[in-house]
Image 1: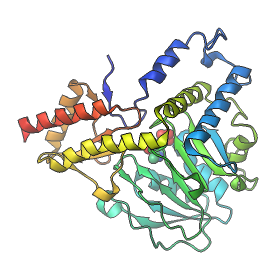
Image 2: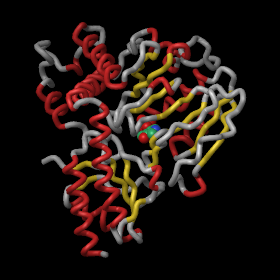
Image 3: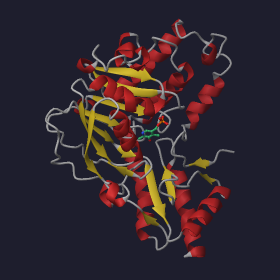
Image 4: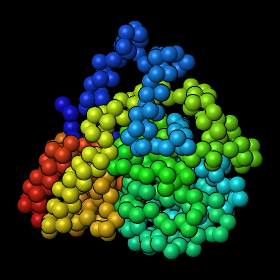
Length: 359
Ligand SMILES: *Cc1c(COP(=O)(O)O)cnc(C)c1O
């Protein structure tokens, strides 16, 4: 039996995609082998990765002058690849809205001067700071944000005013949840295990003039974007099977009607949960309303004991992985693209019931 899985990542995937993958497991389209067993230099595999890229370009309207890169090493590896490749003058500005932005900022300090120009640490990252007039460094190579803060449940509804500097964004947990204007960024990337596919792939989308030879001294070959750009993301063996599943998810998204449709559905789903939180006398949302994420919904009751009781009872009833991140406690429901509306509605009825008994 399938459960409602509210995990922040690795997370729920569309059932149709999993069924297709299962059907093709032993014999991928008459090749007599699984995609897992196939050479990445083979024709069928080249078709898989080419189609994945073409479908992603369609979904996001990616212009010609942006490269799509299938990278490895998780989002964490991007925390170093970004400064190693994109900081030729050795200066960058970071906006600190949570654990992931902070980790990226700390990592960048190993390669140059990384300035924290804004932060919401004062209220445990429960909001997005005003980014309309920040002290952007004159010689900054880029401004860095984490666009959707998976752990805290906040999202930039408006991109920061970078005063002409190039914007770099980690969109791991909001990737493909709604349309995105790629031209607003120099580089945008996301680990796929939140909203797209199995862990092990990071998708990067980079303006092509930023892909150069000039990197931090002795940057390893595998940590240069140019290596991926020049070799169709196959300088070495890529995570073949994971890219294949991502490709299936792109096709699924196109079949659903694309990202405008996903956005509508995601808004509808999030509203069901947020409206209930706003009316409940037991549960409260933990972030400022204007900054609420559509993907990660964080909330608490009045006590740690009741939080724990809720998580345990929900788990027993088939609502899995609702425990908040260890750094914030409470609860978090991640309601990515593949979470059906019925899952959110059932969760809310369960919460109403819990409130009646424990309120
Ligand atoms: C999960 C997550 C990360 C870390 O991803 P890894 O693939 O585990 O390195 C980084 N940034 C964001 C926004 C995330 O949600």
